[in-house]
Image (cartoon, rainbow, N blue to C red; front, side, top):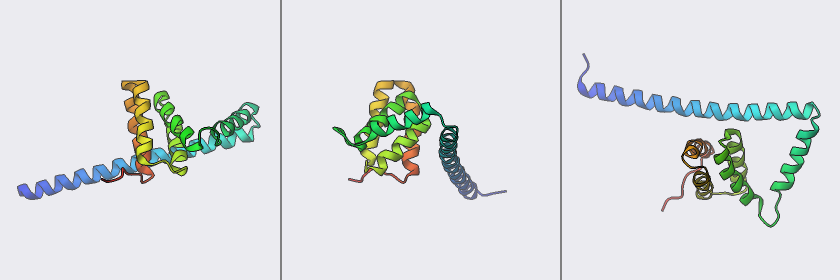
Length: 143
């Protein structure tokens, strides 16, 4: 028979392990989304899809620096992705915005605009977007 303190330690350890497993599942999900996106891209390019080729050209034109810099355009796309509940889109545009120097706070505000525009259902998407930011090691600034 375990003592009460040993039982509490065991419960805490089990909780810690469950938390770590949850984080691993999230990472595996993000890695799988990336792998599927890359496979689909390669397949569509390999098939010579004229529509996909046009989409890539449009994407390049839409996200190049102009009156709005690429970073701002990526932040807009993050908010739209939250409203559309497109996990692959959220992951891609969060990664792109971060690579353009977007901060945690800027991304969070873009996600919050998406929540406002999408209402309650967008809060579910926002949770996924926060997981992507966490997977990139992004954290809020302190103080």
